[in-house]
Image (cartoon, rainbow, N blue to C red):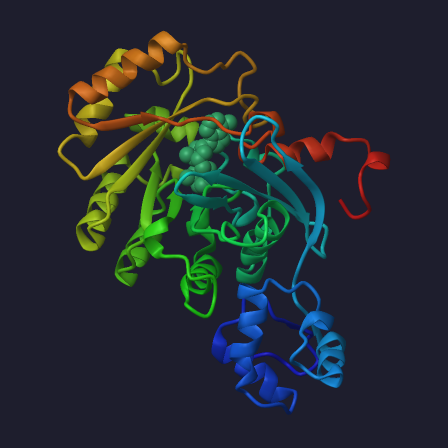
Length: 366
Ligand code: SAH
């Protein structure tokens, strides 16, 4: 429950929470639906614009709380692809980034769920500088609303239809707030995004995968595997050391069985590290016969602070050979198309760059 003196933050509240907040202010609870409409359908960024609330009410709302928008510190549009990226700064100076990609089938937003990451994947920039904190449901939803407002023209195409939780952070390490954000993203009073169009990517925290399975949502689950054997996997993904590949894949197949959704396995191809023919055969053995799609991702340097500088993405030849082995074993395999590389669209890279920009060039608070 909200305490009276705590300022109300409207983005990220459930309908009952909004109702309670209005009642606490001595107002009618039915305004919850009106507020939701302004927040998520109209994307209002200022109480002053809520024109069906009286001036007095708008003032009261501004005095007692905020909508919950962070500052947009940088906003970049790719010159190569229909891709936009924003770097956001929250009140406590924590920063997160998000990306909107426009496809023929709709507009997809890639969300960050934490500031920093505790999983410390060697090839990923998100964990560099450590873990700062979880993002709240409202802070996660604000990313969608900001990109929709800045990147999409008003009218027909002004809709985010897909979400991927593949930005900074490990979504299952922030289970409650991520679940709440997705509930609102999905709700008819919220953003109305079908769970079938939402993909949550995880390194495979087994207890949380089970918890997610029990929710029985038709949400797509993507597992970042990156290696076919435990020794290498635990080096590349230190946050996964507690779980063996067989435990993680066991949880993934149970998830598929419960939800009937095809799973995705992600595998970042690093030359000479995890891209040999024998590793491809081992990976095929693990995946074949299951309702799964393998997504190969070319390594995008520089990775984490601990990543060897000599690491490079796999050569085209190795990538092709790797793909062929998987496909011949009957595993549906695709190579991730890279978009927006001119705006450092990979996880954590923009925030990383902003840290290396001299303070004078940065906006206040970044
Ligand atoms: N923590 C979650 C979601 C975020 S990362 C997870 O690990 O699944 C989304 C995907 O991008 C993951 O598969 C991740 O391993 C991959 N990735 C991160 N940094 C990368 C890089 N530098 N090059 C290629 N893929 C990368």
